[in-house]
Length: 231
Image 1 (cartoon, rainbow, N blue to C red):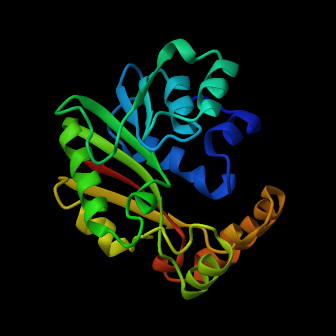
Image 2: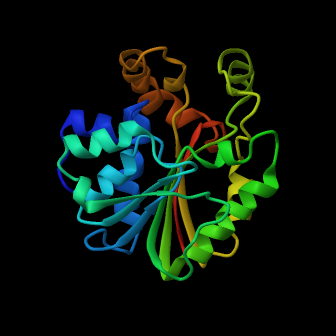
Image 3: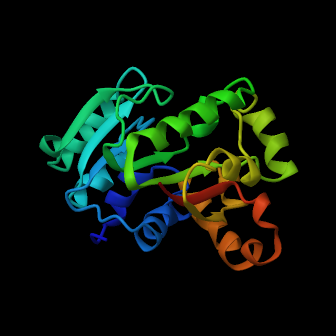
């Protein structure tokens, strides 16, 4: 993996960086496809962080979101002198316009939003579309929000604007959605750090995630699932 400065890592991950950034090393260690010259699609890109990472590592990236990527994505990629290596498209993850074509599909914190208002069927459709879009041997690299612990559920409903709208998945549901893939490897991470109100607070709380909670809580209580699914 290309060595990343902390500011670049912040541009890629943006929020609870210490926990979510674990996806990058996991994908590169478990994924069999090389990013160099790979045809890569980021769905639900928002500010285009994963597209930035892909382009930094030599991929031919399609940065997409419903309605098109955020303006911040264009500026971010321009700031890193990578605009010429990234294509921007308006793509609905439930209707991906590729078939047996992509080497890698990337998603981060997307599936919960696709399942808004308790719509598990939309989540199943999106992952089937991802499967369809990949070449034989292509891979889906994902980092998604889990339903996590009872504490997470209560606090999301009280303090997160969309907390009652998103459909946070369980580990079992994610495995069910990925049943078409020939293999799936995953880890879970992050427990208390997401309760920090600022990134500095989340960095401090990450110490407890790493050295205490990672050793004592069940994996289903973590709030992030990171995985590689191979077609």
